[in-house]
Image 1 (cartoon, rainbow, N blue to C red):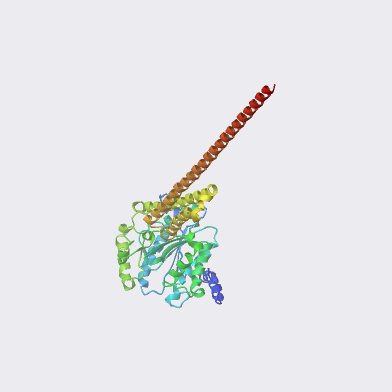
Image 2: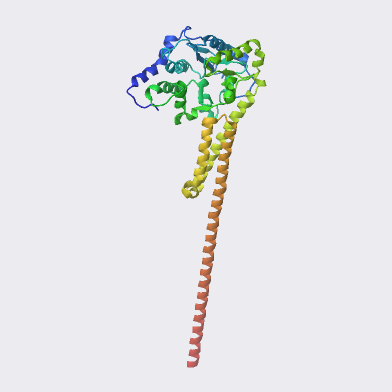
Length: 435
């Protein structure tokens, strides 16, 4: 993915930074660590694969990671951070956050990559343990509103196409937003973060308007990474302040999180309003899970994706059967039938990869592929019938020709027999006269 460069020494250095961070800073000062609590007392009755910790893991499935330093709104950010820490205490999620910059020396364009470096350092540590986790990143300009919602409800089911999902993300009108996301602690994630960290140095020709956010988006948008990440509805865990009401998906009572990206000087007042409400009227925001739309929305989301996966499987199975039994039809007219199905499949794959959260787009793409396969079935069946009719007509023609040939042969034989009989009679008459 990253081409060769004379700056390879820098890339090698980046690869060792996570290990350095862990062994150099794995002490209380650079980040706050909350010991995992007993999760069982916070168990939810929501029936969904992956909601509760697996007993075999022996530890929480979620680790919270962030960084808090160098912001002009530090005091407000600290109040926001406390909401995430409290949530971690309730659900037993260890919480880490970085307290000083690693690179950039205060330069925003480089310093924002501290997020990726620190997250990678935590992952390297987690990778040494004999169980898997998801790391949940949250930016400093976020507030945890509803601690009745466990982060684990967003994790994918452990079946079929979902087994490969390593990153759960959201997007706004500008594309991927890196303010809040969940990422599996695994080798793929380590490589993703390494590539994103190195991207500005090794591929300087690539435009990165949103720095580390665009770098991560560029890396996970490469073909080999597409099946490992999926977009979820933004309002689930990355709802924005009503400041962005015109763009939709804003936070409301019962929302898990509220995010305040790019608000500049308007951010402190906006954060203050939510934090004050959380302090004075927490019951208005902390709506129990079963009284929210989260369970039904999440089940419907994965159900739609299952339907999409099943439709893709049916399409592939049908094409294999046609190729096996009617290969001449499948490749006829430069593969016209196959091309129509392939186009519908590409459109469905694209929706799954880029807009899985869009119910209407996904359903329309599934219906489009269903229609393409149904039309192909009708067309192939028609062409097969036409071939059968043509073969039947040819067989009837062959039979008719053979019957005609037999009739002609029979008539010829009969004529010959008659001629022979007449000739024999003539010979007998001549012999009789001679006698």
